[in-house]
Amino acid sequence: MRTEDLLAAIATGLWRWDSVSGAVSYDAEAARLVGLPAEPVTLPEAAARACFHPADWLEVKAIVDLAVAEGTLAEARLRIVDEKGTVLRTVRTRSRPIARGGSEDGYYLLGTLQEVPDPLPGTSAAGPPVTGDWRRNREAFLLDAGRALAEAMSTAEVLRVAAGLSMPGFSPEGLAVFGVQGERISVIGHHGPRAGPITLFTTSRWARTIRRPRWSAPAGPSICPRRRSTAAGFRPPGRSAGPVSAGPGRFCR
Image (tube, rainbow, N blue to C red; front, side, top):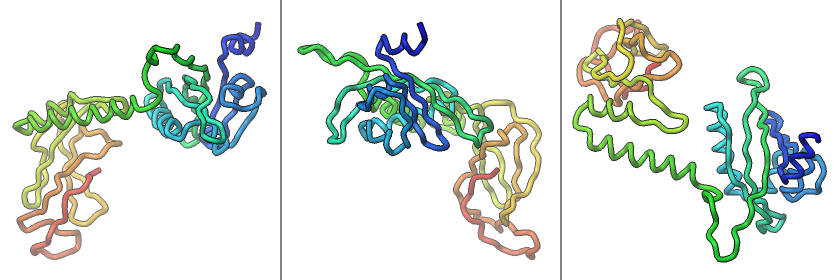
């Protein structure tokens, strides 16, 4: 027995989405589940999106983006609707992004579609709701983070609390707090990998001579505090000495 025959016997379809062209391909069973004739078909993204409830489509896009970033499976429930917006059925999809080549070449999303049975009369629906879990988890994380940071009484406590926070797609490995006094910027708090020697570098913007810790991630920004200099300020290259107003702190790379 072929794999396609086995999947069709358990009412499971296969589908593929090309992130570059936007084309969505269904096998015969997947096409039937989304309300199309039971035959293999390839649709443009706009036509494929019309088969799903708009709220579910937006939700699954966020879930897929997270799966791409973490290299994990994307799992979601989607409501299938007809041209009048009537819900025909609910399906469950499990898919995995497969890179096409380089990071700029996009990816294929390969997965399965399976119908979720309706609950029996007089019983409540089993399992999680169709949409919203991912968003509610993110909001709960932000509330917990805000509460924990509000209770911190010092820079060291803020760094300790922030370093312990994590959620899908975000897990800090090292944190630093920068302070500005006059013409100098310095690290006033650090949590994570042990700090090494400090090196100097100059940015392309005027009035920026920054000390960069060797332990900072080269691909990620270090956050400078949004303060104004109250002393003589920075002097851009080629200008004579004298008071210069420094703008707010920016992301220093």
